[in-house]
Structures are given as structure tokens and as C-alpha cells.
Length: 327
Image 1 (cartoon, rainbow, N blue to C red):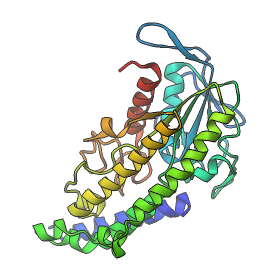
Image 2 (cartoon, rainbow, N blue to C red):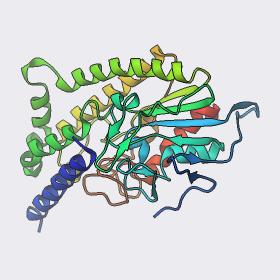
Image 3 (tube, helix red, strand yellow):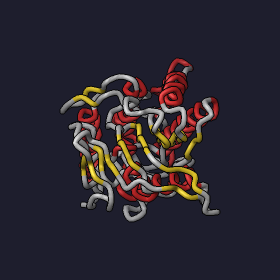
């Protein structure tokens, strides 16, 4: 599923949900010091990253790899030379580069899968080169956030909103606890989402090996996904169109994805950055003023079911803490 097709499907689901619910009830500026080169690379003044004790821990070139959670689709201001990748100057790579005064090459692209790290990615508006292509012995920092598209997360959420639409609109505890989505993805005794997660983890192990081979002197950070749904399940039927029972199911699947990413990072000798923990309570069903993730019908500039500017800032904070050891 392409990025535009997925977002269109999610938007249609959101509009249908909003209409059904009604029938049952009476620009950010570019980061200072960061510019985009003709090749699409964001640059910031070179400098040194220091720890809390004041020791220099990093300086030089930073390459950001990843999918739409890294790129920041629909968050002002959109940038990047490759059309269709939907990079934002408010994304966490730009914020990290600005804060740590590193030279950034942002290779992230909406819709990217693990295969797009080593091969060209076609978008609806152009072609993005292999994300690993800029890595070299001069690279000092690499962040990577990927895996959601390999399991088809957007398609899964879209399917769940379709399956759950009727029970969401039926009042009562039984309807809230029903799990049409879980029943669909676990029919036959196998959890098909978990199977995709395991397959993605295997591919990621190979990708991390390639990163280390191409950038042997870089510090590499694998960035996990923030909290999309209320932790442990919660009521957000009219926000996402998913029953409370299926919210718990999907949240558990998201935790499994992050767990697989953490294990892959540990096996590769890479640092895992937890963005889920800091984002708990800022999910798509939370109050609009505190959200890090937008629902099917965004209230702030961001793609449906993706981080908004606050979410990208929260992810940047987590990455910065991991790099500097401050916090």
C-alpha cells in the first residue's frame, strides 16, 4: 500500500466513523541553523555533543534513516528534494541535528520498508535512493526508525476500523469488549500480525549488519515507535473506531513490534531508543492538547495515525537523551 493510498483509506474510515457517530448522537518554521541542500540533505553547523560531565561524545556527520514516523508527513514545514517522502523540518532528525549541532543527511521516506534501506524506493512522486547510500567511514551518528510498513500497520488499522464500526456504535459493555479485529487476525489459531513482526525482525538484523559495515565508526540508534493507543486498552471508539477489546489487542501488537526491535538492536550491538514509555498518555485517543499521535481525523497538522509536532519533539528528546547520556 502506498503512502497516499493508505492515508486516503484512513481518512475515509475516519470520515465514515465521524458521520456514523453524529447520526447516533443528538505551520512551524524550519529549525534554526538547519538548511536543505540540493541533494535533500539537511545541514546544521558542525559541533560537538557533550555529556552531562562535559566530555565530548560525538561530533560530525549524522544520517537519519526510517519511515514516515521519522520523516514527519504533513507537519510544517515540509522539505526534502525527493517528492513523495514527506520530510518535515519539525521531524526528530532535524530537531536532534539542531540540538546537537550535527551535519544531517535525512534519508527517511514515508512508506519505507526495510528493503528500501538497501534499494531504491519508488514513491507516488519520484524515487528515493537506497537509504544506506550516504553511510561511510565519516558517518558518526545513525538513527533508524522502521518496521511498521513491513507489518502493514496502516492496513491493519484500516481493516480494524471496518470490522469494528458496528460494535463501536452499539452501547453496552459486551459490545465494548468484543474483538472482531483480533478474531480476524488470529483466526485459525495463528496471529498473523505476530508472524509479520517476526519476519520483519529477521530482515532488520541483516539491515543493521549493513549499517555497521558501511559506517563502522558510527554510533547507531534504533528508534522504537511511540504509543498509538491507550496502554492496556481504553475507550476511544469515536476517535479511532475500534472497540475497547481491540484497542487492547492492537496495543499489545504494537508492544510486540517494539520488543522485536529492541531484541534486534541488542543482538546487533545497537542502542535501542524507547519512545513508547515517554509517550504513554499522549496517544491518539488522548486530549488533543496533549496528543503526540493524531487520530483518523487529525486536529493538528500531521498525517492520520502519525506523530504531530509534539510527538516528533518527544521522540527527539528521547534520542538526544540516548546520545548524550543525559537523562
